[in-house]
Length: 444
Image (cartoon, rainbow, N blue to C red; front, side, top):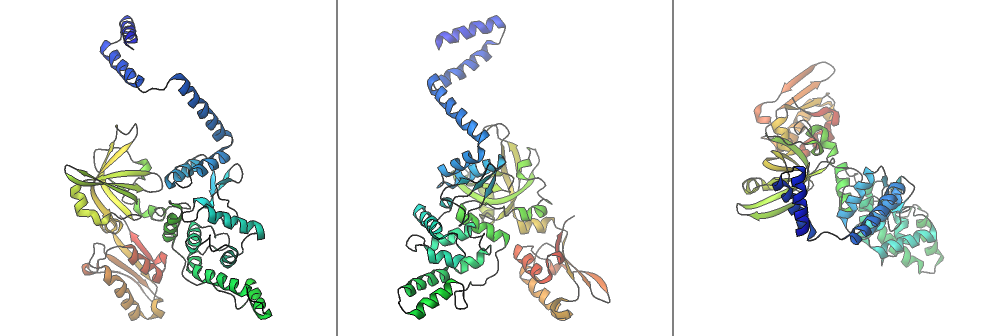
């Protein structure tokens, strides 16, 4: 290296380059030489790189299915490979109790079927038991048929619930809340059928046959309300480790864009503070000389971004940082040259819940009544409205009521004492009563 240093210095002089700059460049190369790969090592990696690049380019679905299967137990790795598959134009089909294998499988050149082994809480033995039962007697008909035909020693309640949460039964019944509520009944019915099968009387055999065919005396599902989109995705995340079929932030994106103007993927470094928003998907803390600080991972479906929260703000606003909840951040967005070109860092100056952001930016909450609420009884409607608003007062957002019936139309502006906090529970209860189109948060 010393010999080459002299050669480089002499060559720089001949070509008129600044010697100080050239020596600085050589120092970097000399440092790399301490741990750089030799040619044979580099050549071996180059061959492997070429092979995998060729497979990904020409047989992308098969290659990505194998990549996903290679580290199925690591949720972070699955998520990275899943996103990469989507970015390469592939479509990921959800786990299916009647179509999935243990591993991820390519269905055709454009589609990959999610592997049952990547569902948390299953395990290889349980999945192989399910696959054997499916191969022996054909596709499962419903949850009760699945529980009857599966070995309860291998496929326990936890495994079944995980498969339901992941959407593996959607091809049979997409009412995941009802399926989850009925798991206990289905397992009990299956155990009862096993006991009946050991009896020898003709009556018992006929009764078991009647249940098998879904007769009048067979087990029934527990009827419960369907999950909201947000709850369905949260349950899915429990089973798969990430949001698979959608993103909870998407249903709020149109409203949030009224104050957080740009998605996280479109943010740019600026001197003045900016508003940004996303779902809290992770939080880590660190102790510094100034005290404990937090690093919040926000995700809005377009990308994920880390936000630094220093100790003073963290102490004051800690309660607002809740995983899987929307967080609005006012902060400085700067280039992070240390992390790499194009990377950004965000330092929070203020944290807001979605309800607080609505209260700060919304013009008013607008409600529309058509005279038909509470059976046409205006007094009863007024009482019910008062009872719904009361738990969320006092707040920052004014309330306006547009009322019309067959005889008259008017718009009422409620007084300051009736200002409300625009929390999700309030909007949900109002929309359940008045319908979605009659409840709106109006922004300037």
